Length: 212
Image 1: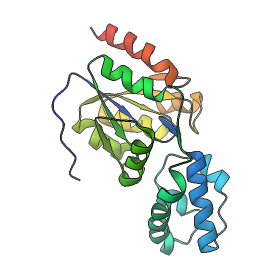
Image 2: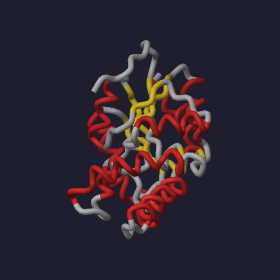
Image 3: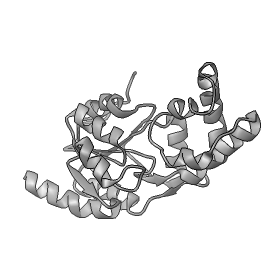
Protein backbone atom coordinates (compact mmCIF):
# COMPACT_ATOMS: atom_id res chain seq x y z
CA UNK A 1 0.00 0.00 0.00
CA UNK A 2 1.53 3.31 -1.09
CA UNK A 3 1.11 5.98 1.57
CA UNK A 4 1.24 9.74 0.89
CA UNK A 5 4.41 11.48 2.02
CA UNK A 6 4.69 14.21 4.64
CA UNK A 7 7.56 16.50 5.56
CA UNK A 8 9.18 15.80 8.93
CA UNK A 9 7.48 17.51 11.89
CA UNK A 10 8.28 17.36 15.62
CA UNK A 11 5.62 14.87 16.66
CA UNK A 12 2.51 13.20 15.30
CA UNK A 13 -0.80 12.27 16.88
CA UNK A 14 -3.02 9.75 15.14
CA UNK A 15 -6.79 9.75 15.47
CA UNK A 16 -9.41 7.17 14.62
CA UNK A 17 -12.49 8.54 12.83
CA UNK A 18 -15.83 6.86 13.63
CA UNK A 19 -16.94 7.49 17.22
CA UNK A 20 -13.61 9.12 18.04
CA UNK A 21 -13.76 12.29 15.93
CA UNK A 22 -17.23 11.96 14.43
CA UNK A 23 -20.59 10.48 15.39
CA UNK A 24 -21.30 8.58 12.22
CA UNK A 25 -24.11 6.44 13.63
CA UNK A 26 -27.03 8.30 12.00
CA UNK A 27 -25.41 8.27 8.57
CA UNK A 28 -24.23 4.68 8.75
CA UNK A 29 -27.64 3.60 9.95
CA UNK A 30 -29.25 5.36 6.98
CA UNK A 31 -26.85 3.65 4.56
CA UNK A 32 -27.66 0.21 5.96
CA UNK A 33 -31.38 0.93 5.83
CA UNK A 34 -30.97 1.88 2.17
CA UNK A 35 -29.03 -1.32 1.48
CA UNK A 36 -31.71 -3.41 3.17
CA UNK A 37 -34.44 -1.72 1.16
CA UNK A 38 -32.57 -2.25 -2.09
CA UNK A 39 -31.66 -5.90 -1.49
CA UNK A 40 -34.59 -7.10 0.62
CA UNK A 41 -32.17 -8.32 3.28
CA UNK A 42 -33.09 -8.18 6.95
CA UNK A 43 -30.54 -5.88 8.61
CA UNK A 44 -30.84 -4.56 12.16
CA UNK A 45 -29.33 -1.15 11.53
CA UNK A 46 -29.56 -0.18 15.20
CA UNK A 47 -27.49 -3.21 16.14
CA UNK A 48 -24.99 -2.35 13.40
CA UNK A 49 -24.33 1.13 14.76
CA UNK A 50 -23.98 -0.16 18.31
CA UNK A 51 -20.74 -1.95 17.38
CA UNK A 52 -18.93 0.30 14.94
CA UNK A 53 -15.21 -0.12 14.48
CA UNK A 54 -14.35 -3.22 12.43
CA UNK A 55 -14.34 -3.17 8.61
CA UNK A 56 -17.63 -3.29 6.72
CA UNK A 57 -16.93 -6.84 5.56
CA UNK A 58 -17.05 -8.11 9.13
CA UNK A 59 -20.43 -6.52 9.73
CA UNK A 60 -21.82 -7.55 6.37
CA UNK A 61 -21.06 -11.19 7.16
CA UNK A 62 -23.79 -11.06 9.81
CA UNK A 63 -26.46 -10.25 7.22
CA UNK A 64 -25.43 -11.88 3.94
CA UNK A 65 -24.07 -15.28 2.86
CA UNK A 66 -20.29 -15.44 2.62
CA UNK A 67 -20.44 -15.49 -1.18
CA UNK A 68 -22.17 -12.08 -1.20
CA UNK A 69 -20.13 -10.26 1.45
CA UNK A 70 -17.65 -8.64 -0.95
CA UNK A 71 -20.38 -7.56 -3.37
CA UNK A 72 -22.62 -6.17 -0.64
CA UNK A 73 -19.74 -4.36 1.03
CA UNK A 74 -18.94 -2.64 -2.27
CA UNK A 75 -22.60 -1.75 -2.75
CA UNK A 76 -22.78 -0.29 0.77
CA UNK A 77 -19.73 1.86 0.07
CA UNK A 78 -21.36 3.06 -3.16
CA UNK A 79 -24.55 4.00 -1.30
CA UNK A 80 -22.62 5.67 1.50
CA UNK A 81 -22.04 9.15 0.00
CA UNK A 82 -25.75 9.74 -0.65
CA UNK A 83 -26.91 8.56 2.77
CA UNK A 84 -24.17 8.89 5.37
CA UNK A 85 -22.38 12.20 4.94
CA UNK A 86 -25.08 14.71 5.86
CA UNK A 87 -26.06 12.86 9.04
CA UNK A 88 -22.56 12.67 10.48
CA UNK A 89 -21.42 15.35 12.93
CA UNK A 90 -18.18 16.03 14.82
CA UNK A 91 -18.09 14.68 18.34
CA UNK A 92 -17.61 17.28 21.10
CA UNK A 93 -14.02 18.45 21.20
CA UNK A 94 -12.98 16.96 17.87
CA UNK A 95 -11.88 20.18 16.21
CA UNK A 96 -10.22 21.49 19.37
CA UNK A 97 -8.32 18.22 19.83
CA UNK A 98 -6.82 18.45 16.37
CA UNK A 99 -6.12 22.16 16.84
CA UNK A 100 -4.34 21.43 20.12
CA UNK A 101 -1.89 19.14 18.35
CA UNK A 102 -1.09 21.86 15.83
CA UNK A 103 -0.81 24.50 18.55
CA UNK A 104 2.05 22.46 20.02
CA UNK A 105 3.75 22.24 16.63
CA UNK A 106 2.57 18.73 15.84
CA UNK A 107 0.75 17.12 12.96
CA UNK A 108 -2.44 15.06 12.85
CA UNK A 109 -2.98 11.80 11.01
CA UNK A 110 -6.40 10.17 10.76
CA UNK A 111 -6.12 6.39 10.40
CA UNK A 112 -9.45 4.65 9.96
CA UNK A 113 -11.05 1.42 8.79
CA UNK A 114 -13.46 3.48 6.71
CA UNK A 115 -13.09 3.40 2.93
CA UNK A 116 -10.71 6.27 2.16
CA UNK A 117 -12.90 8.14 -0.39
CA UNK A 118 -15.84 8.10 2.01
CA UNK A 119 -13.67 9.21 4.92
CA UNK A 120 -12.45 12.11 2.78
CA UNK A 121 -16.04 13.12 2.07
CA UNK A 122 -16.55 13.46 5.82
CA UNK A 123 -13.44 15.61 6.12
CA UNK A 124 -14.61 17.92 3.35
CA UNK A 125 -18.17 18.15 4.65
CA UNK A 126 -17.17 18.85 8.24
CA UNK A 127 -14.14 21.01 7.51
CA UNK A 128 -11.80 18.75 9.46
CA UNK A 129 -8.28 19.10 8.10
CA UNK A 130 -5.82 16.42 9.16
CA UNK A 131 -2.32 16.59 7.75
CA UNK A 132 -2.96 13.20 6.23
CA UNK A 133 -5.82 10.73 6.01
CA UNK A 134 -5.34 6.96 5.63
CA UNK A 135 -8.33 4.65 5.32
CA UNK A 136 -9.09 0.97 4.81
CA UNK A 137 -6.94 -0.14 7.78
CA UNK A 138 -8.16 -1.94 10.89
CA UNK A 139 -6.68 -2.86 14.28
CA UNK A 140 -3.05 -4.02 13.92
CA UNK A 141 -3.21 -3.07 10.23
CA UNK A 142 -3.37 0.58 11.25
CA UNK A 143 0.15 0.27 12.59
CA UNK A 144 1.44 0.43 9.00
CA UNK A 145 0.35 4.06 8.71
CA UNK A 146 1.06 4.97 12.33
CA UNK A 147 4.66 3.80 11.99
CA UNK A 148 5.05 5.40 8.55
CA UNK A 149 4.18 8.82 9.97
CA UNK A 150 5.94 8.36 13.29
CA UNK A 151 2.81 8.67 15.43
CA UNK A 152 3.77 8.64 19.10
CA UNK A 153 0.11 8.75 20.21
CA UNK A 154 -2.97 7.10 18.74
CA UNK A 155 -6.42 8.18 19.93
CA UNK A 156 -9.35 5.82 19.43
CA UNK A 157 -12.54 4.44 20.93
CA UNK A 158 -12.26 0.72 20.25
CA UNK A 159 -10.14 -2.14 21.55
CA UNK A 160 -8.98 -2.51 17.94
CA UNK A 161 -7.48 0.97 18.23
CA UNK A 162 -5.63 -0.08 21.36
CA UNK A 163 -4.16 -3.00 19.45
CA UNK A 164 -3.22 -0.62 16.61
CA UNK A 165 -1.32 1.68 18.96
CA UNK A 166 0.44 -1.25 20.62
CA UNK A 167 1.49 -2.72 17.27
CA UNK A 168 2.86 0.67 16.21
CA UNK A 169 4.72 1.32 19.45
CA UNK A 170 2.52 4.36 20.10
CA UNK A 171 0.84 5.47 23.32
CA UNK A 172 -2.80 4.36 23.31
CA UNK A 173 -5.25 7.08 24.35
CA UNK A 174 -8.88 5.96 24.47
CA UNK A 175 -12.14 7.86 24.61
CA UNK A 176 -15.35 6.21 25.81
CA UNK A 177 -17.52 7.74 23.10
CA UNK A 178 -17.73 4.51 21.10
CA UNK A 179 -18.90 0.94 21.69
CA UNK A 180 -16.19 -0.02 24.20
CA UNK A 181 -16.43 1.04 27.83
CA UNK A 182 -13.55 1.95 30.12
CA UNK A 183 -13.21 -1.56 31.53
CA UNK A 184 -12.91 -3.09 28.04
CA UNK A 185 -10.38 -0.50 26.94
CA UNK A 186 -8.23 -0.91 30.03
CA UNK A 187 -8.40 -4.69 29.74
CA UNK A 188 -7.12 -4.32 26.18
CA UNK A 189 -4.12 -2.42 27.52
CA UNK A 190 -4.80 1.24 26.78
CA UNK A 191 -2.57 3.67 28.66
CA UNK A 192 -5.01 6.58 29.00
CA UNK A 193 -8.81 6.75 29.16
CA UNK A 194 -10.58 10.07 28.63
CA UNK A 195 -14.34 10.67 28.77
CA UNK A 196 -14.25 12.39 25.38
CA UNK A 197 -12.08 14.64 23.24
CA UNK A 198 -13.00 17.69 25.30
CA UNK A 199 -10.45 16.40 27.80
CA UNK A 200 -7.75 15.85 25.20
CA UNK A 201 -6.10 19.32 24.96
CA UNK A 202 -5.39 19.44 28.70
CA UNK A 203 -4.11 15.86 28.65
CA UNK A 204 -1.87 16.62 25.66
CA UNK A 205 -0.34 19.67 27.35
CA UNK A 206 0.46 17.58 30.43
CA UNK A 207 1.84 14.74 28.32
CA UNK A 208 4.13 17.01 26.32
CA UNK A 209 5.32 18.83 29.43
CA UNK A 210 6.26 15.51 31.02
CA UNK A 211 8.09 14.51 27.84
CA UNK A 212 10.17 17.65 28.07
